[in-house]
Image (tube, rainbow, N blue to C red; front, top):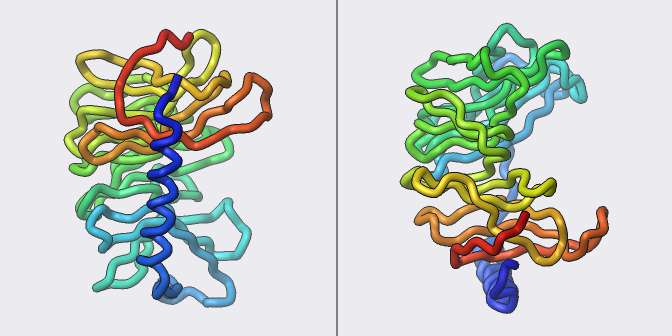
Length: 248
């Protein structure tokens, strides 16, 4: 079972206080339109931001609501919003995430026939992982060498390691968290090279997931059901101590 619920609630409460003070003077800013686009016939959204805060990645549509023709975009302070284009011979692409300095971008290209295909954009060139049709990119490591997806993680030297849904990775690439199937149920999971994939537990229900991990790999946050009834009540969890409780 995930313990330290009181500590988790205290940390969450303190975080709310800090966020309210930090963002009290915040305001919304427009990221602009693709050069040449007609403002009234375009919509865009941001999916990810670099660790240094200087690069934002996302997607734009030439016609509002037409998600069959979306294309990947990137925004920076110096250049504003720029179109990356379509990738992998698909008509729908999205830039989902980027590494710490924003130099390496990863995302998905989608078609109705083959589903999602991951791509990596670096130095103006896109590499399509065409043998990974049906995989959906969820994140990338700070150095840009490890790609996360809903099926597992990928490295150029070794290819895919299918460990389940990968949500986040520590800064030194040693710990990956997400969720995977254990004993017939999806539980929050933690992977390391030495220990492989292990469940992190739950708050009493039969579903949980780890959504993020701290840069040093020591703290995980996520969500867990509190009963075995689905849909049912659930709660955020904070986990700062690794252990295996035999879930599944």
